Amino acid sequence: GDDGSEYVEFAIDGAARMSSMIDDLLEYSRGGGEVSFEAVDTEAVFEEVIENLRSTIAESGARITAGSLPTVAADRTLVVQLFQNLVENAITHADGRPQVHVTAEPAGEMVRFAVADENGGMTEAETEGIFEIFSSGHDETGSGIGLATCEKIVESHGGSIGVESEAGVGSVFHFTLPKTPPSGGEQGDAAAVPADAVGSVDPSTHGDGGAQR
Image (cartoon, rainbow, N blue to C red; front, side):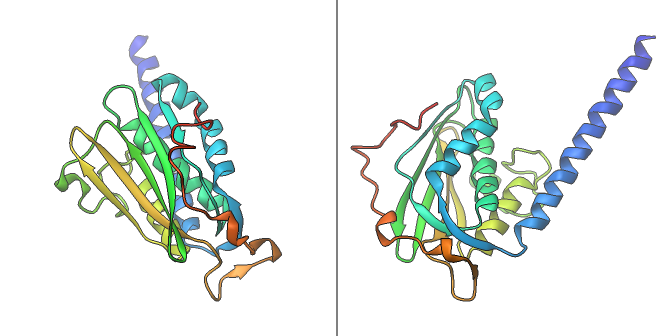
């Protein structure tokens, strides 16, 4: 009867959640592995993430925009995962229609990226330990793995990650990635990032520009 079908649906739902959690754990374990550095166009990465999250963006009515995003020295697969986790996290935790803006600026030998959302936000207590695996904080999977994976990816590139947030106002997740491969890092010929590929961001010409979807 109905009870039987409800039980089957519950079991399938539970299995799907478990499968998702296993995928997240695999991503987490890969995040700290060997990093193969190459020149990565983060503007192209942003476009790929928008495409990957197309159904999530459509369902939520999210507005995702970006400023001018530079080329960095990184592992492209890991950087796609990093951006996707942070953008999806911002969409999932928005109060109302999500608005997310991605920016970048030079910071010495690194590029400092910021993923900002204009609604949602967290209290200081909620940001405590937010990047720790199985933290129940602001994490899109609900398993506490997504943001821990982000931290692992950033640190494997010699960068750092942090968050600034105000409850009811919004959050800014910021992280750094190198302009050139760290010494001792694996690299191919493609890793030579042209010096002019990383410039300052001019908000007057980019702002909410063409990257909007």
